Length: 151
Image 1: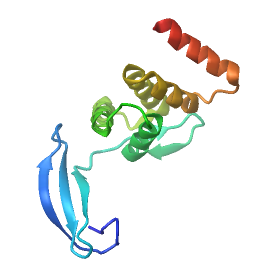
Image 2: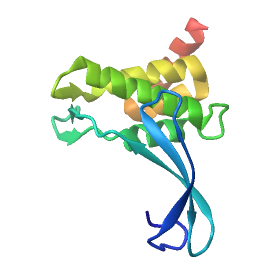
Image 3: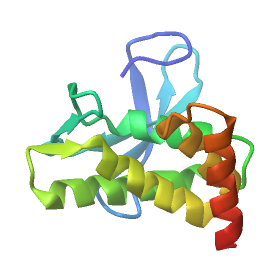
């Protein structure tokens, strides 16, 4: 495993344990060159469906892309990375349980928005503004008004 800090190709495993959902192994590693520590995750490679985008393009499901999108929406908000990782693990399992070879991006986007709405209104609005691609301020204001009416 290459060190993300210095690029040295060898490291030693300092600690290894299962994640809470037992779907991955978390390993703490130490670089043999710079002695800095970093974490890696080892997962069983499951069949991943193809995501069909709104414009018809198709691409492989990418867990990291989903996590990064949620992290951006939750930036400077009280949502822990552990919560995000657990949610994405559950979402990934749900997608695999559906058993379809292709899955619409809308399925993923709606699940993410629903979870963000439960966690944090600001994170929800941030994600929704990108996901729904508001054309103008009026669309954005309608979404905010809808959120306020629900509260």
